[in-house]
Amino acid sequence: MLSFLTARQTGVDDPVRLRRAESTRRVLSLELNHDRDVERIHGNGINTIDIEVIEGRYMLSGGSDGVIVIYDLENNSKKPHYTCKAVCTVGRSSRYVHKFSVETVQWYPHDTGMFVSSSFDKTMKVWDTETLKPAEAFQFEGNVYCHHMSPIARKHSLIAVGTKDPKVQLCDLKSGSRIHILQGHRGEVLSVRWSPRYEHILATASTDSRVRVWDVRRASGSLFTLDQHNGDKSKASSESGTDDRMRLWNSATGENTLVNYGKVVNESRKGVKFTVSRGCSPEFVFVPCGSSVAMYGLHTGELVTMLRGHYNNVDCCEFHTDYQELYSGGKDCNILAWVPVLRQPDNEDEGAGSVKGGAQNAVNPAFEDAWSSDED
Image 1 (tube, rainbow, N blue to C red):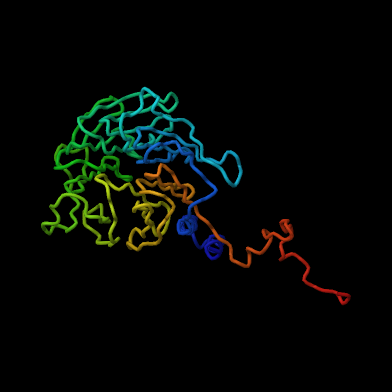
Image 2 (cartoon, helix red, strand yellow; image 1 turned 90 degrees about the vertical axis):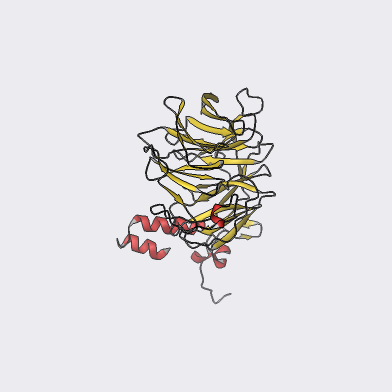
């Protein structure tokens, strides 16, 4: 790290390289934070969490009990040990609460005054954060597995929705109606995600074992399908269901990069809600794996570490870009915080912070006198 600081000071390196180096160092030192608790509100497993990007302060969670919670992640007490408190809750006593499991929650990308939730009760609701009442509600014919709003869109306000129906639904926030469907899948749509670079590009994944990429401005079918065999037809490519594998694709060509992550266990019929780091070099991917979170090198497939702390299966995780932290939620009804632990060398541990005679040593040994007199 000193070499990066020196290079930055002399003007050899730009600020981005130093920032990436520090972000990478922090991510590689992630550990369960025993000094930070997240208030336990959910009575059933936690399916989904989302951290807003405006301040990076508030987190949404949605559970199998239909409950939605907003947490304040800031340490207002200024004490080493603190609890992230629930600011407000859409609980079972609310007339607007989802009747069944909440599968996805997402903050409106440009304003914390609104968020969106979708549920197995066949609805997607657009909430006013201030009143905790739905400003809009969309009804569907089957269970809603997922939804997503584009983080960069300026020319449209579309929410992509994946349901039990093979057709991908596009809902317009401005008009409050479903305006378009995307046809091409042959099974339930388990995941939808807008491109972080091009606001009209959408990727969708289905139980038909296919990931399709769409340009929603086109009336025709999908642009291309991500094919694990890169065009070579085989029986395996047409089989339905999970193969317990994770793949990295070239989004420009649709080709499988053939990175081998090994077996990624998915014990549910739903998609695995993983997350990717941002600002690191190289980047990392965090994947729920049983009661742990597996951390892989994104481009190498190398298993870096397993983050263990949950008492039951992990269902979701979310990377906090501002602090290179990770939050995970599971069937044990807990949300855990994983934070960078930057250890000091052993010889420094015995320095100014050491305790002697029951009191903290106020003087760093480096500045103490090292000479002795003849009288000693």
